[in-house]
Length: 428
Image 1: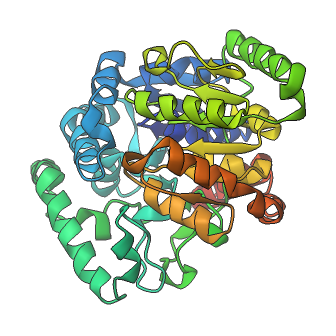
Image 2: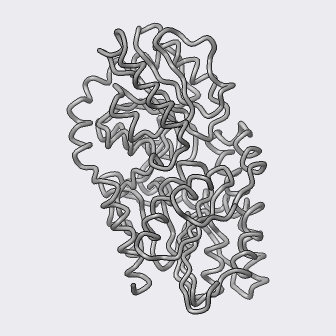
Image 3: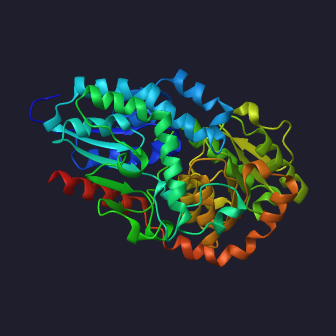
């Protein structure tokens, strides 16, 4: 690092849904004059380089593929355990060592996804460092007034508010057992005290937390600490830096949908998530429903082996396509419940059927339903008949999805607010 020059390290572990918003913030920071280094999984570094950023590999392709290929990743309970274990076992020590060897604390600003525990420990060791935690979705926030939805069990909605305290405590103790010992071992070696109930009181930065969702998609704001700032949906899909073949594929797909009867009917879009390598059942159900209801459909999957073959008439398949360009042409979106996908549907004014599996997806799905923008049921309860019924009910959401679309600000204004908050923190 050059003496006297502030360096901004943006760390984005995770899949494309985690990377896209942090990449948008990193590019905005660089445009605002920051010296930015962007850290992400190997497979996503070309996006950052095409966006003009200097990069470093955070997760090798072998590591990423091994985790994404594990079917337990999408289990409601085992998925959280795998992610937490991965963040601690294969990321914590190496990333912390890199920070110590490559950063000058007085000249370093960290902007990190909340699962960057190494950055959080580094902030405790070097308290002159400012750390900005980035929280993509509200599911991990705690509220006894408006508790997040954490599972697909119907009885969860009837749990008395006071009982959630016990649920949170049990979850904290469970997560502490998974990774707390390694975090505390590192802290002890660095002369730091132990931390307990990591997800309750420690994992987010004490300096600033950027919540990448609006107030109307959040828990009750009275339950938020003052360091948490709601900036809105960043609506980032890297559409301007995707590979040229992606742009060509999108253009070809849209041209095809405008021909014949498909031109008079917008397609249904089906998206199980970019990292989902076990979506064959979902994609078969999607294709069957399109064929049964004689509707055009677009099946999105980065794992071509999961796609049904042959596809029915008027059903096409593609890999990753930017939702900002695809969804304005869609009649509905059926998806896994990632917050980035959800927010893009809000912006496009497209009704949603959400089939959540794990992580924040159940909570995002519940919020879609409460807003009147669609419905949901768990992915493991899918069937062509159930999906047909949910899709058939979507026209009644037409007015509401347009109301919500009008409440979604532009990407530029949201990223700009995030950068203003970061600059204010460091006195720029």
